[in-house]
Length: 179
Image (cartoon, rainbow, N blue to C red):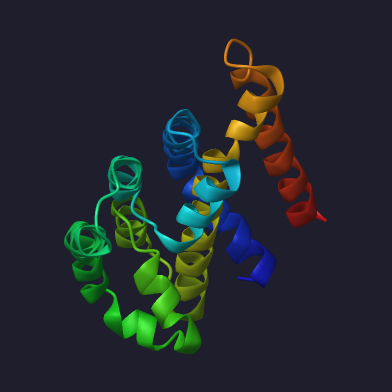
């Protein structure tokens, strides 16, 4: 497989993840905005924390003034299952060199499920795993800041512009991949 084919295969395999992440992340972004946080706070949280369930809990913690220790311990416990998922792929991840920490960090229920279904082997398999993780992470971050549309057009009409923007980004990316 060429690198372009690997990316295309990863994108196709990540579409079900995209369909769920975008909408759940939009809900997260709206909740952050409702709690008084700016869109860049949602982006920062999504860049550093990659557990949707914990991000929702984090809103309550930040709003209530929870201690850093409480937040850290809860994050560790809620993220631990995903670290265990990575044990299934530790040999593959080791072969990815410097990408290994990223692969462990981006292991979610959804990426684990996709990785378990891959039939490709060797570098192609590792490339697909990497791009599924990367695309999935991007879907979450895009959804989390789609709240910008909420701020621009208001709560009664934000969903359509947000979906159009996300669809446009994906179409542009798809055309770049095809070129």
